[in-house]
Image (cartoon, rainbow, N blue to C red; front, side, top):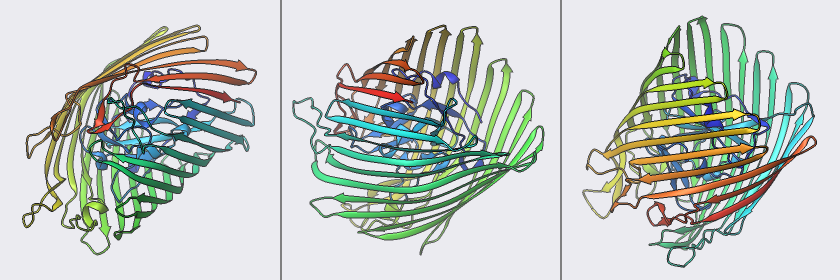
Length: 590
């Protein structure tokens, strides 16, 4: 696996101390070792948008405030093409293909791994650390603008030296009525959410286990756009259980096994009629790694998944299977990972879709601390149920979207006493054919249906530099990231909507004797929508925190100011984002 610099884990936490929870191990996507990754740390009172801001080539679609849908598109491939995982198990949504990042329980998550080769985001749950005690826990309370309250509590119990059990509950309440530029307020934008879960962590000879259950319940307004305001509402109920097992049976063979069952209900309430969507999901995933030589590993993976949708409008079900073989070679300064993946999708009453995806990942150490890296991969995206079967819209003749991904770059990292220096530069290219787009029908131009008529091309470059100084009570760091992307619809020559040509993030942080101060400045420029150019925008956030030791406990205070320059901007056209806001909070750890 190719990982970027450890400074990334330190430079996001303004207002947050080093957490007493450490990230648990994660099973790679389908057992494959092919990857090009960045790791982003999740901190107190962050939302998905602020966490993923530090990945400039990632577009986070945001319909405004806590109640708005949040989706992710990596390097122009689209949100349905960007997979979301929690602890190595995929978050499914066969209806629309979009996992709502606003439903992620960020309070209980410690990191996000952005995998450019697998085109995925993997969220990781934190393991409890007890520091010689049998019970550990955290209590948080956040409060701020727009009537926002965020309570959270977590307790972990050490069952014995190898096993621990934790439980948590938290949520958010906000009226979401932030002021607009014209003096009015954004209404019907309230959001109420309750999230809870429990995790069992265990280690045993040659292996470990992580099992979890989770619940998410939310009730929110859906205000619509400024052009088409709405009084509609949405209710979500999500239940699930999953487990991930790793067992090293011998120096030759290691098994990774995971399973999941989930039930998701989305109830959309509208003056035009209510719509009820109920999804049931089951997964069983396995990966088998064979260490054949000191320089040679081989892995085999096999997954099976079942999804069923019952809704007011239509019902359908799907079986999907994946099989993959991968091989990793290591020769002194050179590493190579190659893989071949088969995916088959079988919907009731239709012909199956089958695909083969080769991939290769290379790393060559040019000098101490300097590596040349590259990857190439083919990837397919099966049409969603809405694209295939939605009454009056679905098209059962659709083919899977077909994408080629490539990346090449340099990694540099060097420690010099109290200093750490890191840099990374990447050039990337994606080419997507059979892109599913809506177009007028020949028989009636007023009726639009999805077709495989689109071709999309994205090429660009990403540059990262960071420096960190740590000595005594002082820690100083600064990270800068810049991404340039040219994302084009090859059929029309138009730019893909909302993908910024230029994205820049600057994040300096200073810590001294429990005090932490950080700034985050972000710029998005060169965006377009269907009407043409969109305004550029930049935001400035600041975080201030202080922690006090109370015996074996700690008490921390947090203050976060977002969009301090009060820039009025839109990520999605006609869906305004909040202006200036403040968020305060206390964190007690025991």
